Image (cartoon, rainbow, N blue to C red; front, side, top):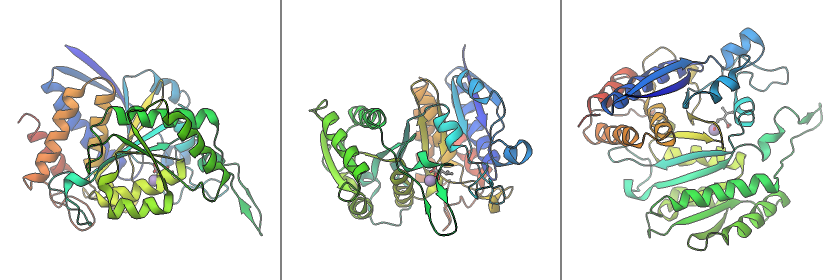
Length: 355
Ligand code: IPM
Ligand code: MN
């Protein structure tokens, strides 16, 4: 039989519970499709930073590059800080830049049976945020300047970086069926080119690259207007491409309209290695309480399987998740946590995998 080797990074806080839950689901789905799953654990995050002074253990990048796929839980603990006050356990720079995973892919989809705080139906919220993942404002991590009177972090866009993320966004649009409103394949460039030169540069390169994809509609929206439109008129969106920091903010906004952060997975995609993680944090206060929503981590697992060529098992998982909500087997409370608990939610998905 076929074999799949994964690395699992449990992370901090609720991370280990979520990754455990996701691995149970992945294992069951792969078994149903005749694939043997082997999992190697890779410790990383705030707890590891506290112990060793680095959020990654030596050789971690090489180990992650050597497996078929990587699934990661959220990381970070509020009391684990670097000397400059930023979070010590965060792997953003180490993993995203270390593995050069330049595209952060965040599908925002309101699934049937999942309540949204908006009035939109599940059909109307179905788009992908393509967040640039290696530069933009985040490139200033650790190199900003600060004294008692002022502080600054510099935003950087490079031609190479913008070209590759914009191409990635158009390629993503090519693989999708278009925006819910009109079935038109569309990429929306989200920026503040009316204010900042770096964004004007981003938009100009977007326009250049868009001419390589004449069959896909290219549109622009300022980021503030986009924030409003994502709430008021999300059905127009298919793929959105944007700078790193904008993508961080707007993906939380989008997730909130789709049932909350606990409903959205994401992929950090590089040309060699990729890894998949929820877009939410490690929720330290929920640790060990069997409360957190495992669906984000489970959907990460499905995205990862699709990425490494196991789309049958990926569809199996996504279908089961949808059925668990439609049937009412999983119900969320006002915080977006499954009422029956983390483990029970995962188990109800496993039960539906073979249907
Ligand atoms: C995310 C997270 C990270 C980010 C944090 C944990 C550093 O919020 O993946 O969106 O800001 O990129
Ligand atoms: Mn974020």
